[in-house]
Image 1 (tube, helix red, strand yellow):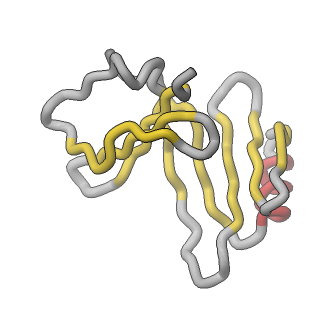
Image 2 (cartoon, helix red, strand yellow):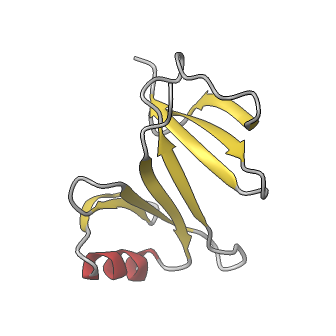
Length: 114
């Protein structure tokens, strides 16, 4: 089973409000906002953008998340380095992290167990 394209882009920022307004200015609509300076925006049917505010002493980061239909039936090529296997997240999905040949980390996200 292969990945199904880009599910999301996760961003950290020093200012949730400014970051959200930036994406809204690009045509993204706010789907939801949390009470701890984060939220999800989407533009049409494409990948969503999830933005979370971090303290000033942390560098803002970008993480691309690839979609997986089912964590249990997903199989990777043995050449792909698994950093963390699929694990349940606090937001109701399962997530795996892999490393590409240049050392970048990629997240794979599947629906949570029901």
